[in-house]
Image 1 (cartoon, rainbow, N blue to C red):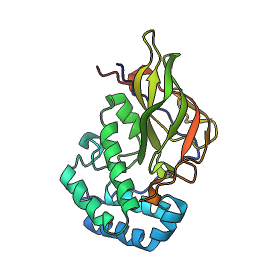
Image 2: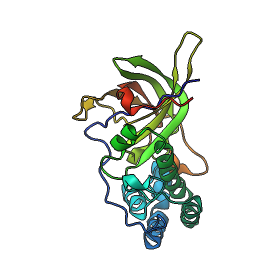
Image 3: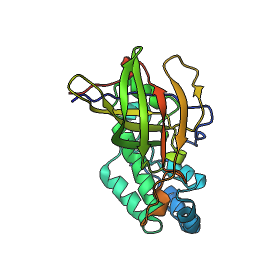
Length: 245
């Protein structure tokens, strides 16, 4: 088995940059968490109807410190504890399960991304530790080595919170003589148009969405009115990748 982690830069019209978190030494600002709960309570009907949390709620999640909670300290993160995350998520879950789910995943995905090699982490958190990250880890696409990097191709589904994410971690299969092995690739969340990010390391190709997922218990956890996408991406060079055994 060979696991490959790669990075892909964002299209120009990706999710807007959010304000820095007002987090404490424990990783969360309690008043900010209560503010998320107030927003979630006031928006819960709209959240269920549109199948995603609002940009206002996502901004509040960042302000409370969820995105940076597990990010390493040397990259500006809180390197927080699981118990602190559990307490904050429980507070949110009392008012809106969808918001609590997305906030918890934004924190957990920062922990997953922290296992990237240092060049990858530096690129991912170049703008600070409050970057929102989504995931679709099931290997639903393929990753083929090409021109010193990797080309991703496929369709990925069920990525909660991707509407507001600036990066997404994707799972893929790496074809080989003995058949495909699994791979995991974080990339910038595609928005349906082609662009580059001002760096020679990567580019994004067109992506398309198709509606297929409607949660029945926490409707606001769907990534968007469309719940999957497909396309091809050329990923970053090997120095930003990892191949753990």
